View 1 (tube, rainbow, N blue to C red):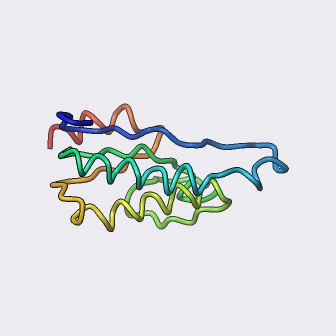
View 2 (tube, rainbow, N blue to C red):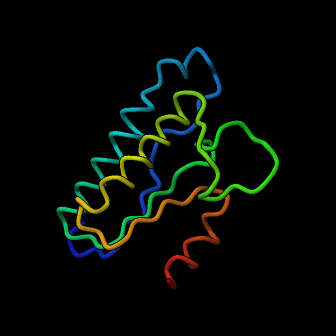
Length: 120
């Protein structure tokens, strides 16, 4: 990561739809702790911007309406909870990591959101 100005972190363990396998999936280790490890490494390397690609699942089960930063998060299940906890940890620690800014974006808005954020 040395020399990088921005890291876009999109890695993680995604949905596992087989309930018998999902119960034992390492969502916390990969999504929450793994994200924290990447962020800490980026901060130590002097990265100035960290963009975390998260998941719309942090908002809970699908309902109609607009999903934006003002909508309360109600994650359900281990996957959604791990993504939500990763987001919370990054938002709380952004100042401690020395970043000027931190962006969390949720698909399907990602492709549109990154260029908009980069301008401002």
